Image 1 (cartoon, helix red, strand yellow):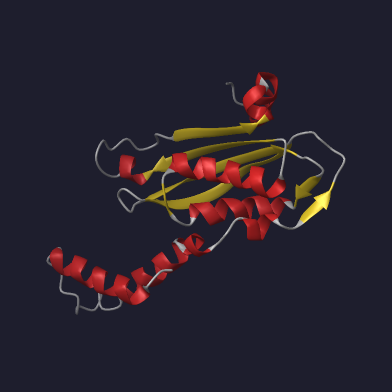
Image 2 (image 1 turned 180 degrees about the vertical axis):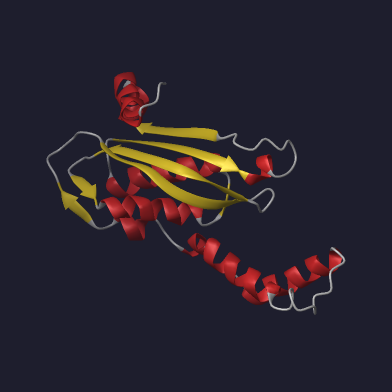
Length: 187
């Protein structure tokens, strides 16, 4: 759980450490604003993906369900800087499907945490496998990391892609290739 009062104190110290006057007009309410911002952007730390994936509908279909271009924003745990992009989620139902909005909500649960893109990709795929008991899941995350674009190597426009394959997507190369084809990407 996010403790906003501790964040406020930390931001005051950070500003003082930068040589700023925390009592000046432009900064007076900054610690409170930053604390509220972190409470919002890290709200997934107190959420469980199961809460969103538990509402399902019966289906006879065993074809790919794909929700693509789910926009997300997350915070890199290494630099506390944003990374953002798109998530593409696919799964093969095993008698039940989740509402499409629940896939986007599942992405949000994991994105709204201090995170690594690689971990987040796998967490989304694992949640689908566990909560939907699906035959397979495939998740691709494409993101731009501000820790790469604003500082360090300073390479704006660069992006990182990660993929997690589970179940039949791991064992059937044609199914994996079909996922990429539906995204308009080559393997």
